[in-house]
Amino acid sequence: MYRLALRMAWASLVRRPARSILVVLMICVSLWGLLLMQGIYDGMTEQMITNAIRSDSGQLSLFGHGYRLDPSLDRLVVRRETDNHRKKLDSLLGSDSRIRSWVERLRQNGLVATAHYSRNTEIFGVDLDRENTHGRLQTYLVEGEYGFGRHGRGAIVGFKLAEKLQVKIGKKIILSSQDSNSEVTSIALRITGILKTNNLGLDENGVFIDLDRARTFLGVQQGVSQVSIIMHDDRQLVDLQQDLQKALPDLDILRWDEMYPALMQSRVLMKGFSLVISIIILELPGSVFSV
Image (cartoon, rainbow, N blue to C red; front, side, top):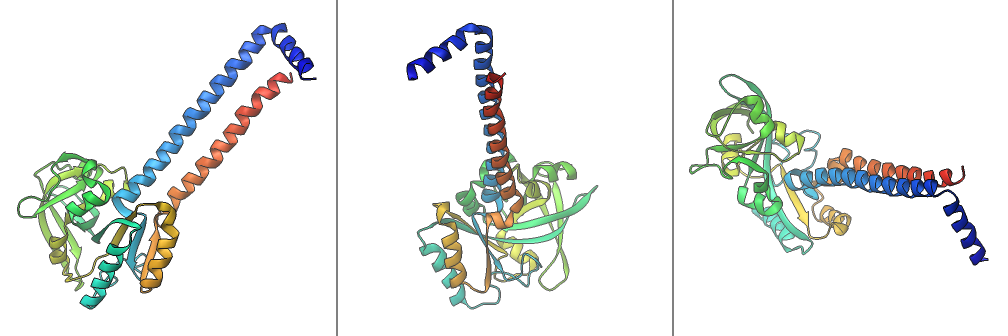
């Protein structure tokens, strides 16, 4: 029976060799195009997710209760708490073998201005050494130096924000914001570096300054807005989130896909798109054979 089927298939192939060659070429080109498109779209989606995790959310983020809905300086992590509470948090994160690294950030909305232009911005008080260990932030540097200068009076900005402000390395900017006492405060800084993270929010609005200077600028004695965590194995993400939530019930603990639902939806859409295209391409040669 198999021999008869093979003889019939061979006869069909050699009877119209042009059609047979055309079908084979069509299958090859279609599969090549499918793999190319799928690779490009999957790569773009995964790179956006990776950039968001490295530069902002981590795989888990800890916030003060209600901070995401009302990002004020009254809703910080470890604000007006005892030193024992702070040591408990440090010990909890430092002793968990599932956690690869974690960083603290103090963030506040404000205004950045030059002599000719001003716009809203998001100010990040960070420790650059820990940020580089955590998410290799230095690899995003496109101009200048990865530092805040000798006296810590420098600032690193997103490249789109630098373009809109029309500033270069060494130029002065003025940051203004509301401090913890609800008073407007300002500080003058010079641009020491420009980043391109491919995270739209940071590239268009982000200004990074020294964490200690940010505390002085905003009048915050202790506490941070966000604790970002990166793990060794993201398959343990849900378990770690649940464990931390039980240990720290007064905090909001969010996964990256909860902070960036649009990126997660993009991944799901790309998988669905690839499935549909695969079905169309793989079914098309069969329809040609039936003609």
